[in-house]
Length: 315
Image 1 (cartoon, helix red, strand yellow):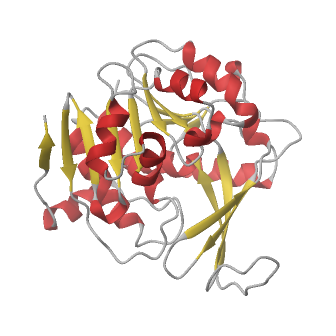
Image 2 (spheres, one colour; image 1 turned 120 degrees about the vertical axis):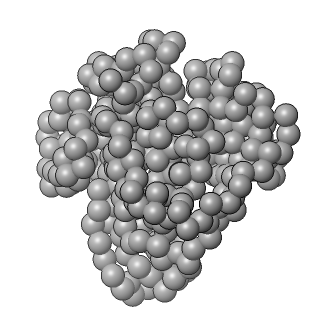
């Protein structure tokens, strides 16, 4: 059986409004379209499922209309969830404001999705070879201690993938060091890598990040339409991006991560997995909604028209 993609982070409801610009403090702005989507960890899991992976959500879900929306979105894609529902508490909301440039701004609540334990995470039953995804946003607040304790108990052959997010660089140095020592794969945008390494540029920061991980760790740093840099086996390769005219960048990084992990679970080499992830992200930004990743067939069709050659940077 192929490895599964297991996500430990928060599944939320994204409440999205399209605005002409962010208001000044104390001001007001009239929104255009308004949408409700399942988001957060759901984005990554849906992207992985659409690229053929068997997926499990290990995080907590509540009891209420928000949690029902999340469960419905997961079920529609054949994604399982393992933890029992949190009684008498609904899943939280991420308020998202999208500007005409497709840039997005978030305000996030904390609710049932933060009520995890070592026992609830273990209901996902990770096996050697499975890919466990961790978010830096889970390393703050009440999810931090149970998540770190659970990670320490994983089999050495479970692949831990860290998506640090903006929160990771703000963590205590000792906690960052502890988590990185358990991390097999780092995947982030260039700003997040810069915050941790102090090095600008994908090719420079990806090498520095890889040095912080477990032996033989893999680092991937992406920079939107510029593509991504992949450091694996001591070699850094830049994979070009596929610039598109964006309408919504919310969930683009999640789409990249989900596609990347699914392709790796299917047995692809990291470079091919990252190339397909670049395509998936490019397609996603042309679609409204966070969990609008393309299918494997759509990625194949895109690649038949666009197939740049990877460029090796150093050995």
